[in-house]
Image 1 (cartoon, rainbow, N blue to C red):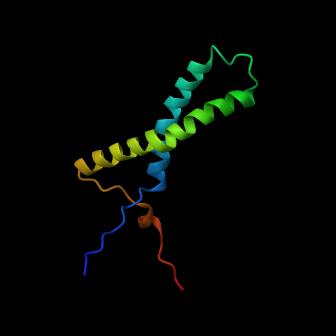
Image 2: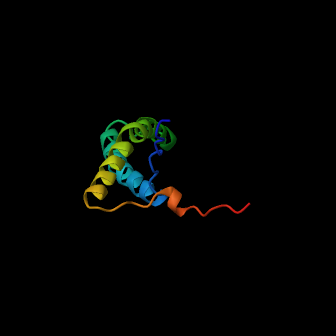
Image 3: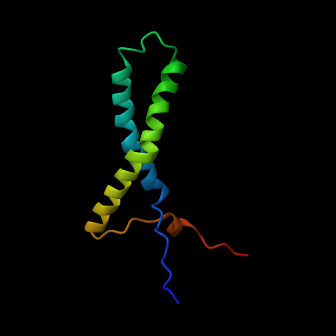
Length: 94
């Protein structure tokens, strides 16, 4: 019989929201600054589309996972165990 491995704990929704905001704010700021010379005459919907088309994949696949790993590594080094999403769930009563 092989030992069963536990799936990795999912960080709490609050930690994920904070990490997402920490990634989003500077990326949007830099994105708006970088696009400013080119998009002055563009309609707002087109500006938003171009910015989000570039930033969402960058955030989802690169920036947020990297920041989340860093935050969890720092917490582990300090001896803290961040609350996980499963810790916030209450057992269902059937």
